[in-house]
Image 1 (tube, helix red, strand yellow):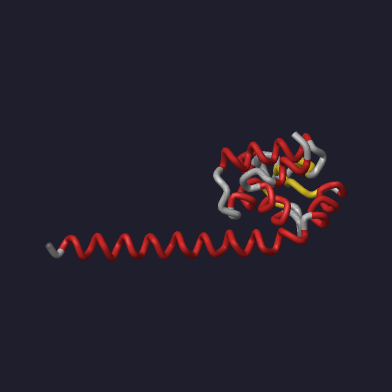
Image 2 (image 1 turned 180 degrees about the vertical axis):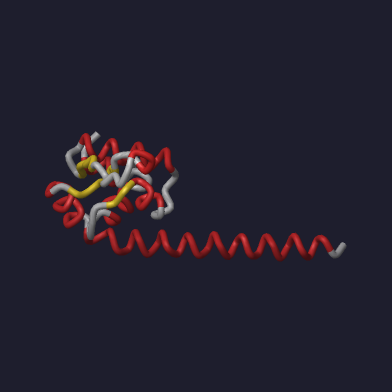
Length: 122
């Protein structure tokens, strides 16, 4: 897979944009609305392509009982930043369309609920 194929995959642009301003953990990236499985696959692909890097950090431990797992964060590499700049012309429109799709899905849910209530009156 090359970078062009990568950005065409579900969730790829969202991940690149999500990491554009700062590093993020897997949980923070999940807030982008990408399923865990897809997110995991895209992160692995992006790492293989050199677009992002994964860093493992030891968290401060106050005592043995409070021992924490290492924190894993993801951040864009210079190559990832360059790719994000190169797709700038479609990125904004893409994100706008994705946002509109989200709104439309919510509207469909509301309408389905209205139909359900209407049918309950029969």
